[in-house]
Image 1 (cartoon, rainbow, N blue to C red):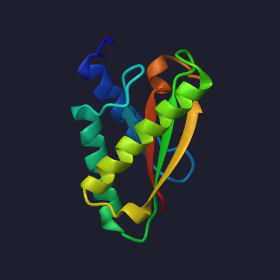
Image 2 (cartoon, rainbow, N blue to C red):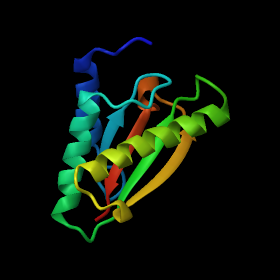
Image 3 (cartoon, rainbow, N blue to C red):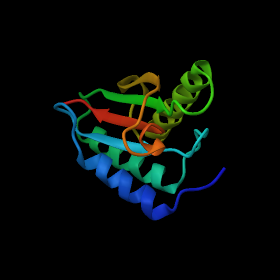
Image 4 (spheres, rainbow, N blue to C red):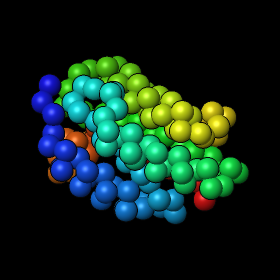
Length: 128
């Protein structure tokens, strides 16, 4: 498994965090291919999301897991997306977000527009 240069990961994470879709801003955690492991950049994004969530304890936190369609079967990608979402949710709870506020949603494999890393992600949405 080849690691992406940290600069690229941080750049994409920053762009993902700044690009709201719908009414809620989304923070994005990116993953390496076929991995659900959290690196330092992922933990930083999770900490940022936890800080947002702790500001207003009435808000729900949605954790949406995705996988790239170019590796593995549909079942493998569904399990991988769930594992990614669960790891991020566990990180949020560890960072002080009440477990009952965190809702997991697995999207499984989704296509990407520019690069596979777009699909290998978890989006964290602190509802407004």
